[in-house]
Amino acid sequence: MLSSYYEDLNAGDRWVSRGRTITEADIVMFAAFSGDWYQLHTDREWAAKTPFGQRIAHGLLVLSVSSGLWDLAGGTVIAFYGMDNVRFTAPTFIGDTIHAELEVLEKRDKGPNRGLVKIKQEIKNQNGKTVMTAMLQLLIKKKN
Image (cartoon, rainbow, N blue to C red; front, side):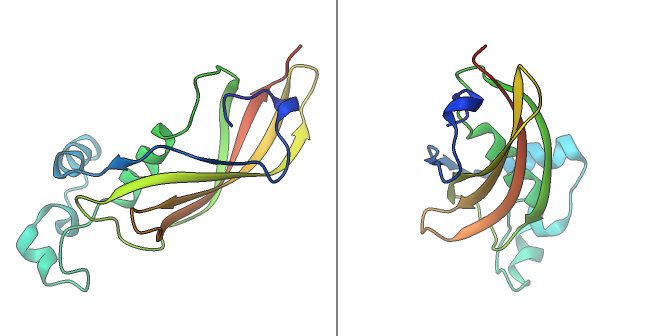
């Protein structure tokens, strides 16, 4: 879907990404990169005593990984314009495989060469449980 031109996108269009398994290495590298070493993500014994019963992925890691699941091969995305209503609705555990489900909600013309597309994104795990939602806005090229 995100490899399509603005004119080819319509409200209601849906797309499902490939999967991506979240690993312990992902969590450790994200903690190192971000500086977020909170025990819920990095301390097995501490996390075992929480309501989750184990370590969970950083919400911002899940958000970051989700952008890597988008199909950008067509080169039609000009820019990531913004994001609203981000919610982390369930934990993502080490070993979970997540994928993105995107739906075009609306379009707005932004001139002769581009348009703004609002997209609902749901990130789901291997059991179909939604772990994250967000409303995305992307600037998309027009054909001319």
